[in-house]
Length: 101
Image 1 (spheres, rainbow, N blue to C red):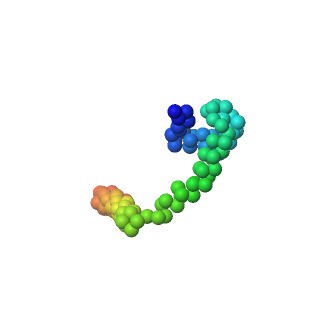
Image 2: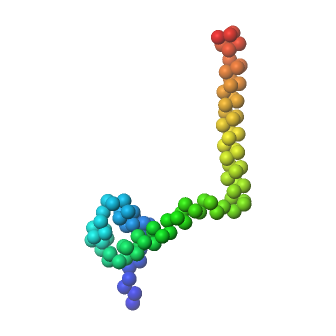
Image 3: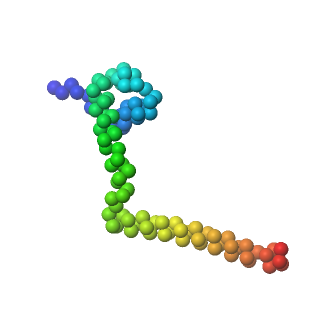
């Protein structure tokens, strides 16, 4: 019979963030969550070791993903340009602009 407790990734992240933020010491976290210090240290080491993967993920896009990102940026820019053109058109068509004011 397996008596080991299983922890969710979200729980592990919360424990590690408590440590890394400096809000709690290792001893305090171990007491609060009833964990062994070796377990907490292992989680922290894994978190720190794998952290660069989070920031590198955006740099390894497939060509399709890169194309989608480029098109989304283009749609955003064109939307902004259209809104500006509508505002300018409204200003130029207003009666006060026609009267020279």
